[in-house]
Image 1 (cartoon, one colour):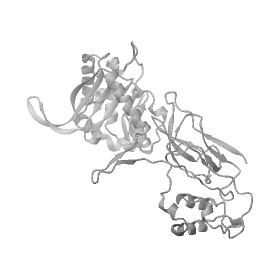
Image 2 (cartoon, one colour):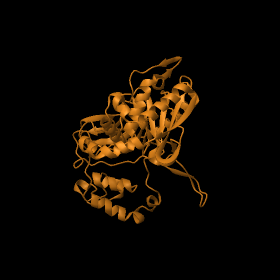
Image 3 (cartoon, one colour):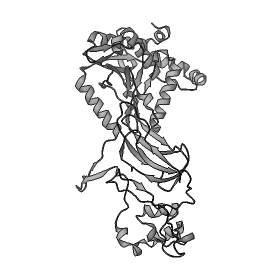
Image 4 (tube, one colour):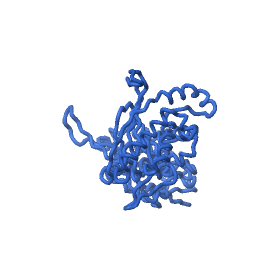
Length: 419
């Protein structure tokens, strides 16, 4: 028997441990090389763990919900076995013991008489029995050497109430219990759900930001009509030429970069008693995902075209939806943009993403009555909010920086001419 250990991959330097979410394979099942075996959640991303080799899973050392570290062995694969020829009995692990192993007992060495109760089950049969909290001894094996076949398992399950009433009364054990009611209050139930590792990390970082930064927010309003007119004029040609839709976020990114170049302190960060001025512009784009808020990074955004920005933002959105953002996607950043307008937000005070010192909040664009040249007119207006760390950024730079963003958006030609 040639066995290979399946280990937790190397995590980033800032990630000490991770959580096993859910096994996609069970003991006794065949796995192909590079096939995803389990999803591993860190406080930043969800990683897929591919099988290092083809074979049959003979042991799972950690159950769903277990906490693991880089390099830890969590499963064993037999590269010489096959799911069709190697009968394996599955033993489930209750949710109370996520770190306990799920083992596959060795195949019986002595053949059981035909028609007697088998001691071993074929993989499909083993799965059916395990799902119903039964073992191979609960079924009559009619297969070769008395092995329990799928038909035997189905027959045993069908006769379960009469053959094993006690087992029928007990629910099948689960590897992980996601949510558990904590109080029975009639029509006012409560449920206690543990935070995911990402949600706990988000809570920690936001609290840290509030406690360590002297956060202040400045506001301004921007007339989006020039950008909207430009977009309406060229969106079809743009999509045909670049294969991506022309949105609004690329304009906000370009406007932010223009302001950061003019006021470098907005792109700086605090390190102890030092101010670190960054000579590059890595813009974080806040993206909502099923797991929570993530902030992938547009690296060297000043060197990216509007088409490049739109393509990258679209890629980030899809990867966030599928849970495929990598640690590299989320590492770094010198300034962030949060677009609550996609959800209908009219105004907010965004929280700085440490160790950055400023963040731009973008909101919903709505037609509003404004005064131009002494007359009341209707314009599509957007309220911008920029939160900044008052420890290093004075109000003057913050206000002027936001005004620079406003001016760039109200005259998009400035972005093309670098004015």
